[in-house]
Amino acid sequence: MTDYFSYTLDADAIRAISSIGLAHLGDAVYELLVRTYLCAHGKATGKGLHRATVELVRAPKQAELADAIFGELTDEEHDVFRRGRNANVQTIPHSADRAQYQKATALEALFGWLYLQGRHERINGLFNLSLIHISEPTRPEPI
Image 1 (cartoon, helix red, strand yellow):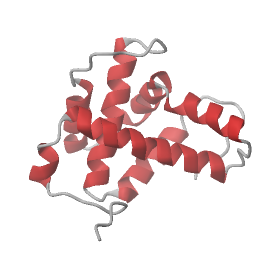
Image 2: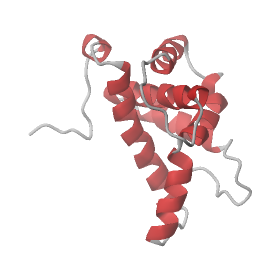
Image 3: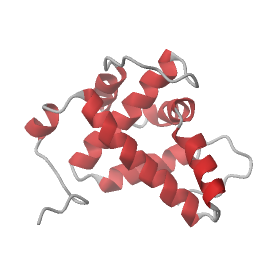
């Protein structure tokens, strides 16, 4: 049986995945981290969890978090980020402008790329670093 929680691919296989494909996977990785973070910090009601999750996974917030970690990325991570940012996206949600959506897609592509390499520690480190920059006055400490 294949273990898709710990699934990894070699560099050539990852390069063959489109930027949109990496972002699609990275979106799920990022949302799982956000949901874990919120549950671990006392968001108890379904309605509260949903609202808080939506706020943190929206493109404007992801763009803010992408800006927060950009200076900490390695050269290789910058390349993946740039590849994700330059993806040909057809539809942009009303809640974001094009630049925000491109940064959000870049962040998701980076998380998808790291996930497929099995670099969970790096994902966690970047996620924790980004949480420091969430501009919520009542924000709990990062996990």
